[in-house]
Image 1 (spheres, one colour):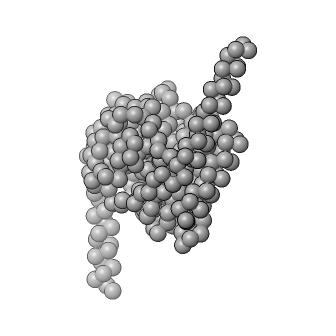
Image 2 (cartoon, rainbow over the protein chains, first blue to last red):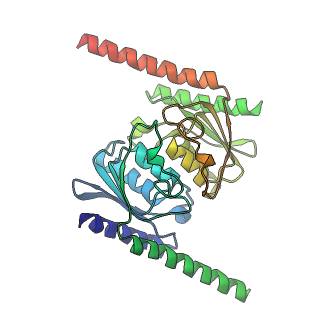
Image 3 (tube, one colour):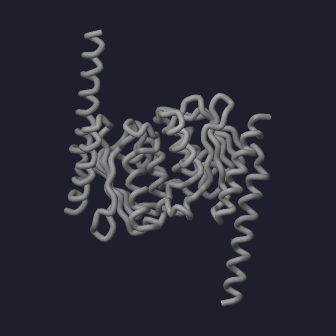
Length: 158
Length: 158
């Protein structure tokens, strides 16, 4: 199934983030059944609040096709996009957003709000959620579990 | 009045955009009463969907202070931020957003939706609207008026 095929590529990106001690979120953008951009969260490494996986992938995709209009492109991301990224997807005219895990602490497609049901914008992407949801969520759960454990050990030894 | 002082700087940026035939929107970010970043819309020149004035200014401000956390920073922008930029402001922990004109076709602070009244996010900037509103709006109105006129002339001569 191609949704899973591309979500697996997004998961590969998320794992690259984890290796850099970044929250493991990965993204790929697909056009005509080819990956035209791939990126992972780099907020801490770059010390850039906008360096989410989706923003970096959109930036690369625009460069790749030489246009700010990513029409007929699909964006795969392991976690439900935040307000900034949901907005960037809308601004770049991406056709479909496919995501894995829900984000109850910031997701703007279904969790905290339904941005694409707000009237007045000039583009509305279609969305598909829950693709390899458990695997995408597990990446995040185990990352934060490890982080908490390290913090606990640091406190105990200080 | 300092709100007007900095909005005038944002307007200067918007005028730079206009000179490049970009929709005239400008932004400055202020910390400790100093401008730490300034930018204007460059979507067409860069062919980048994320190259809105606010995103470019946030990117510069993060570089300038070496952190993704723009705490105690104020963002001045000539037009009410879109979903992407309202989200980027939230993600970067900016304290205050001050804007000029309302955007009925995409503004996410008061016009199309009230993003900062949605529950569940981990930061909520304060907002002030209507600073030099007429001047900010007039920049946009005259830009689109000129554009329509040029398009009309092109059609007539073809």
